[in-house]
Image (cartoon, rainbow, N blue to C red):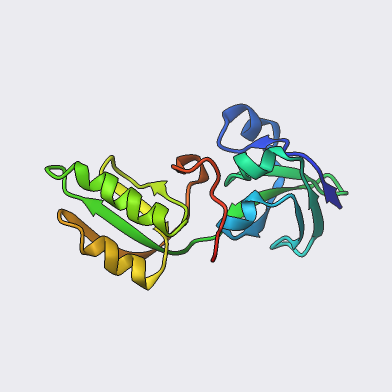
Length: 165
């Protein structure tokens, strides 16, 4: 099966209602794969799929709950599931708001992706030991490693590409 579009996202009531009664067959993606145009995947239900998406995915990315297609029998929908991964979570003390900029600078200096966390004073980035150490050394910042599922809609970068030197 080839999937070339996202039909909708199950977080929207009208999409969830449209697919009520279908089996949901998750297709696992690492967060950085969500920005790729071409994939060959196997769903958790054992369905082999090809994903061939347009250029829009390079900046928007696939999101948790995106419906990639309906299986050949019309019984199941193939749905994007973003896998959790190790991350550095930086909590900035509310009385040190300028430390948010310092965290963003340090993360940007490594060309890593940066995401808003669960509050206005929390930022999250993919894990690296040097970054954990650097962020923890910033005054007013507490940094720790944690397994998280990146919410690509909360990305601070234009794109959240994985970048190495």
